[in-house]
Amino acid sequence: MDAVAQDSTPDVRLTSPIIHVVQPGESLFSIADQYGVAADAIVSANALDGAPKVVVGLRTVIPLGHLTMESENVVIQFGDSFDQIASRYEISREVLGLANRVVNPALVFVGQQLVLPSSEVLIGSTASSLYQITSGQTFWKAALLLDTSPSELIIANDFINPHLITDGQVIRIPADKRDGASLPEPWRKLELHPLPLEPGRTSSLLVETSQSGTIAGSFLGNDLRLIPDGENRYVALLGIYRWTAPGIYPLTVSYTGEDGSETAFSRLVQIVAGGYTSEIINLSPEDAAVLADSETVQGEAGYIQQTMSGYSSERLWDGLFRLPASGIMSSAFGTARSYDGGNGYDTFHAGADLAALTGTPIYAPAAGVIVDTASLSVRGYATILDHGWGVYSGFWHQSGILVEPGDIVAAGQQIGTVGNTGLSTASHVHWEMWVTGVQVDPLEWAREEFP
Image 1 (cartoon, rainbow, N blue to C red):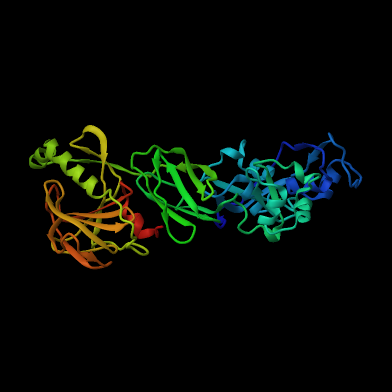
Image 2 (image 1 turned 180 degrees about the vertical axis):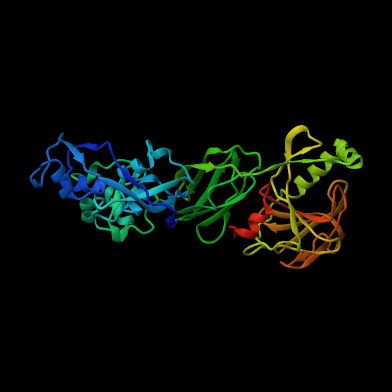
């Protein structure tokens, strides 16, 4: 993601200097590059008198001076690592960690924002990216895959003996070779959109690999359905349950090659609070009697879940969804509800209500196939529309239904009329969406394109 402007540019002084102990094979210039400082600044801070060599074991002060947070930050994406971000923005990992108080770079999570610091003394000498050596891979094979010469890699990494690289080791890539090579084989692209994830909302996962194979994934205890969408390209839709607790959760994708080789990629992903409100619904005696009939209520809910949790392999929608009717938003998705103030706020509003006069046209928000129509006790006249890939729309409380099961409808085609049927307090259409078997906010689909 591109850097995003902020409102302020605070100047932060680093009161605790960094002490670096010189290791075998290091030079003054490799140390300067590691911390993103000028070599002559290290010479001056340590009174080295311009000596081009440093002694192994020497405790060296790294002069970081003032860090100016130049109104930039970056959101960690699914395919990112802390080291990759540091390299991409030409900031040493030590400076980036210090600016963001990151103690363990392995524990940064997808959706987290990192401040990008800069200073007049933070002069990166090499623009480079990173590549992780995979199991059984040699230095020479890595050079071949990265389309660079072994000598360039040796110079970029100050290697004394390239034969001694190990599995999982991260190496620097020369600047002109870095594009597309920041992920280990066979991964080419790993993206989650949008970020951060929120309960009751949708995200899409894009996976691209360098070679054909079998892709699988898991998140929140469920297997992901990764759908082929081009050559070595896969897409998964993630519907996140409304009551999912905010926190950090692992998301893993795995690859099995045609030769039986296996590898996996995992990142911690943040889910933040959805910002939902709550409300008390006061029921009339008649409505209370309907809800008291648990057999009817549960049977209807089971029918909706079963009908809207299927999967069809053809994607029928394209681009943003349209609003199904002209009206005023009278109740948003996700609002926690208590009926007559009893039993706490243990249910939530599972759709978006658009209030309009009875008879107002209802249109298909996107192309799809009519799965079913019904007259229900709670939801009134109902229509269920399948958009493909496990994405469904439902429309409740209609006064009239203009389609039949099996009809193929286009985006913007009229399918019914607004009404006040079923358990409803005023004329409106309740627009409900299910994605991969989970109820999600339909208005997000009118703001964001998926996948």
